[in-house]
Length: 237
Ligand code: ADP
Ligand code: MG
Image (cartoon, rainbow, N blue to C red; front, side, top):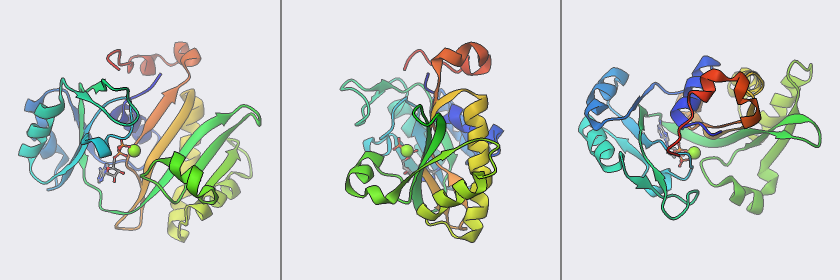
């Protein structure tokens, strides 16, 4: 079962991962209040569908005026968004995430999946984020690390440092990265995930790590023991 980005980010926040202040709306009339509540003078409006590639298809937009959030909501709510990850009819947009705008210095890639061969959770990381990771795998495989990890294992700090090196993190960011890996791992195990992807994980203008996107897949066979996640199911997708 897939989650929407805004649902994934609620889980991220629960696990102390660095996410943006944001608010989901289901009706264009709530756009101004949402921008006011978030504060600041720049926001990003993001159509919520179970597909990536929204940025390149007009489903993610930077705005500097709450009126533009209304326009964006009126344009997308009830309509279909087509991206390279959807089929030709696209996915219906029923909600929009409005969040504060992060000034991005660099976009990185981080994900986790289960590797059944080694019976481990494997983190996949790259310094080339924000783009189609399949392209990086094809054209620059040396820029991707696959690091198997075990929760509670003594080697976890070392494993995290290996990933941090490929992500080209500095010392401060590497210190921030270890608890990120630990918390993601705990989230992955406790919530029975089958896939987790943060693309992009960014370094913001202050030099701090921040999760700008969230893709979460829950193992459907384990849903019976995750009632609060079951409630997040969106039949429309
Ligand atoms: P998708 O993967 O569906 O295209 P993302 O959430 O990755 O959607 O957003 C696409 C791009 O938009 C990101 O790579 C990033 O450059 C930019 N972006 C997304 N959210 C924000 C934000 N809160 N602040 C600034 N830029 C953002
Ligand atoms: Mg993305």
